[in-house]
Each structure stands twice: as C-alpha cells, then as structure tokens.
Image (cartoon, rainbow, N blue to C red; front, side):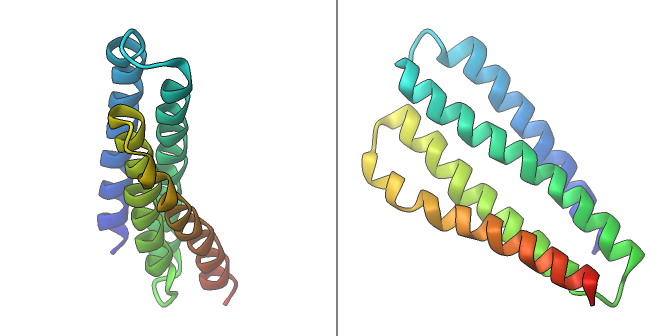
Length: 121
C-alpha cells in the first residue's frame, strides 16, 4: 500500500505541475481572470494533496497496522472531485459544478482527520 500511495502522489504531483504550466501558458490568454484563478485554485489544492499522499505512503510504511491508507483514498477522492470540478468549471463555464466542489473539500478534510487518527492510534 505504501508503494501505491507513493506512486499515486508522485504521478498526481506531476499532473499538478503540468496543469499549472498549461494554465499559465495555454489558458491565460483564453480564460477570464476569474476563471483562471478558479483553475489555479484547483491546481494548488491538487498539489497540496498529491504531497499529502507521500505522507500517507510514509505513514503506511512506518505504521503498517494503521489505517492511514483510508486517508489516502480520501485525498484521491478530494483531488478528483474538488480539483476536477474546478478544472471543468473554469474551462467550460458549467456553473453547477461549483455545487459539487465542496464535496471534494470535505474529502480533503476527512483525509486529514483520518491521517491524524491513523497515526495517533
């Protein structure tokens, strides 16, 4: 499990950097400033939680009996739902996606609490 989350975190960090570069060079001339800011928020939280997956990998290798991997799945869920909805919203203008973005944010919050709980136990 630790290897899976290390690979997932590394790949997701790669994609966060790629999407950030794409926003800076490809989307900047095409998106309104407010939509670009929304996209960049998605990239920022995407990167934070890709790095959090590296912490999950470390925790699962250090405390193999813990349930830290559950936090990892919450972070992956959060990246897909939170950041993914912001990427789609900002590039397509589909506003109703803003209603599901907080669900991904809750996934991030749950992931952090689960990581604390897993390591504390």
